[in-house]
Length: 328
Image 1 (cartoon, rainbow, N blue to C red):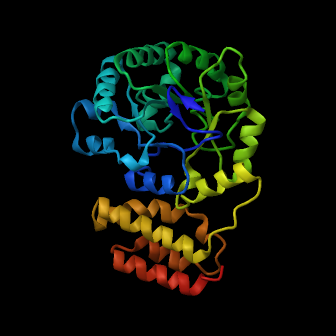
Image 2: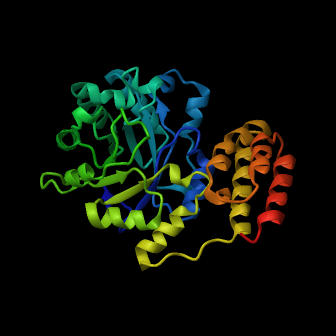
């Protein structure tokens, strides 16, 4: 699969853009485990043109994580065009436009998935950004605003006509948020539309290697994107890539190996931020990792782990977990 001249190989598996998750350290971790492309956290176009320090920091790219996409969101043409030019100076491989974020503070203001209620403006933004930058422009969006307006099949053609080089589709509507199951049937319909020639990346509920293979085989997508299933489990990319290449499951990492990976994530998060903010940041991964699911009598250790305020305290709890559950 190619996005313009960027060759991602056969059946690429990519890391989704996720706010407060896909920081540089986590992107590099996912690359280490086989992600073929990674996306930054989404970046506010409004904040970019105002040079907000925290937002500008999201443009930092490590050469080791390439190919990497920077994703922006906004609600008007001039702001998105100006922001796109700022992003281009950071030299990402891809500039991605977010028309899929469902959260109220974004979609409720007309940005993200809110654009699904104003397709003419969405297309105007895409067309203008494509014309303003030399970097390949891609789009990530959803099936539609709600069950009664699943417009993605027609919208995909319109976006392609605007000049985008790839399209990522999350198999839910904005109204669904992240509830229910992702519907891949319309993703497959877009991919199998003979008028479509750009790569189609499918997203939504890719939580196992088997499901990734099923989506490639059944819906014909060019790539799959993994989001929430990577929380506290960056090794999922290695598992998926191995299964796609061999058709057999990869022998699982030992409990201690997976604990060591989480320890690495903590160290990287603290090094990038500081001890307090780094630990706060990593709690999302610790809370979501499947590593601790099903462990007997784990509740109190889980509470202590998620309340730890220093690296020393957190790693002492890690050691206690390894001693207690290391054979699981």
